[in-house]
Image (tube, rainbow, N blue to C red; front, side):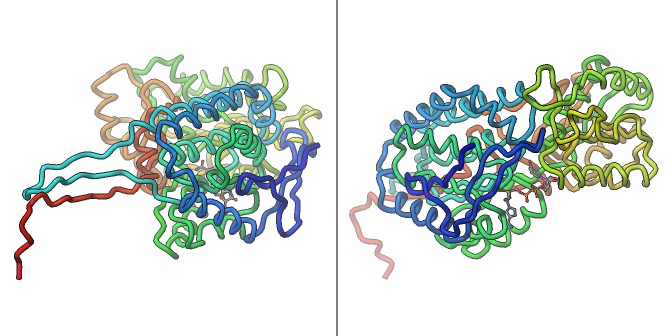
Amino acid sequence: MKTYENYIDGKWQSSRGGKLREIHDPGNGELIAKVQESNRQDVVAAIQAARKAFDSGPWRKTSALDRGKILFKIAEGIRAQARKLAELEVRNCGKPLAEAEFDIADAANCFEFYGGLATKIHGETMQVPANSLSFVVREPIGVCGQIIPWNYPLLMAAWKLAPALAAGNCCILKPSEMTPLTALELADIFRQIELPAGVANIVTGPGAGAGEELTTNTLVDKIAFTGGTVTGRKIMTGAAANIKKISLELGGKNPNVVFADADLAASIDGALFGAFANQGEVCSAGSRLLVEKSIHKQLVEGMLAKIPKIKLGHGLSPGVKMGPLISATHRDKVESYIKLGLSEGAKLLCGGKRPEPSDLSTGYFVEPTIFDNVTPNMRISREEIFGPVLTVTTFSSEEEAVKLANDTDYGLAAGIWTQNVQKAVRVAQQVRAGIVWVNTYHPTFNEMPWGGYKQSGIGRELGLYGVDEYLETKQVNINLDEAPIGWY
Ligand code: TXE
């Protein structure tokens, strides 16, 4: 069993506080690694290393072409150990192996995407009403703190680090205290490819203390966060200390809207996949299924017929389609919502309990759960459960569907199922969400922006938009007149 250290200033370092945290496999409770339970001093050391690397290190003088080549090497490094990383991801966060393999491949693609983009970051020249050469340059923001959650550990690290490094920033990444292992393996790739010291630092530790230091320390210029809304508010408050730039991705309660003219088989699949991929621990999960009344019965029956195909088990067991939840605490939270749904009067169609097989008793499993007869005012329809719980609500008109879809504080994603292209476009235009899928659910592309309206966050990740979040914009005006200003 491995004990990992923090990766600070190009070196492995133990926590100054000497504390370790045990990391357990949520699928069977097995102890799989120990990591540093870092304190504020460790984070300060990482911030100082990043500051030095940015202010006086080689990174800012490294050409965009060379930064891009380094990101390509990181992508290669990930691919070279894809299998090992996927298995580690499964053991650390519980997801089925096929999903982890997809995440790891996508993390490599993300570094490659931004490696290619590094040389395309550019400014522009403006026509101004003066004899002046006026142009805009884009520059790195500086030192970026990056705080990520536990549901897509390596992928979230890639989404944060790749655009930041492509733009020429120096970073301190804090993975979730529950799922730090693949980010630490990524740090080893940084070491192997000789990424200059201090450019990317990985520090493990809890939100209280380590995360707070990253958020409030005035040597940090920008904070990027993915996680829960409650923590997001704290991050905003902490970032106010020195008016840090911020970007936040805070989850959702996403509507998946099925119209009567949809392809029934496709929408049954889409409804299940939208709700239950990654155990429903997905910010963009289609956790609110809105169904046109006339097809409600067929859709529900179709889903129930397929539920037995969602095999629960340890993510490394063959054929498993749903793994355990991340922790006992999180399972308690999900189970409390199931209890709440029952007390609110929703009709439990399936699941709602832990699976029976005794070999699953040591993992944090909950069966895929569907509630019917859910009304929009019920808390199970309004609050992010972040587990395998789907609510079903019916509507009678397109207008009502749009109203229900938008009846949420969140605005991350939405699904629309119809074979009428005009209707699809009309509804997509009215839905207040940053991501809209039509006749599909969940595809995520490095090329396309990711982020939310309303309380789902601030800013966008991925694509050209993602790198913008790591750039400052500077105007330069060169006077071409020989004469003085002549005002006085
Ligand atoms: O997330 P937190 P939690 C939602 C989901 C889940 C809920 C709580 O609904 O049930 O959030 O999950 C760090 N200062 N999402 O408690 O707290 C923490 O160490 C600085 C949605 O696990 O948001 C971790 O690295 N950092 C989501 C990261 O924040 C702090 C993904 C995320 O943890 C901090 C995960 C603090 N004060 C949960 N407190 C999504 N958007 O995908 C914690 N952290």
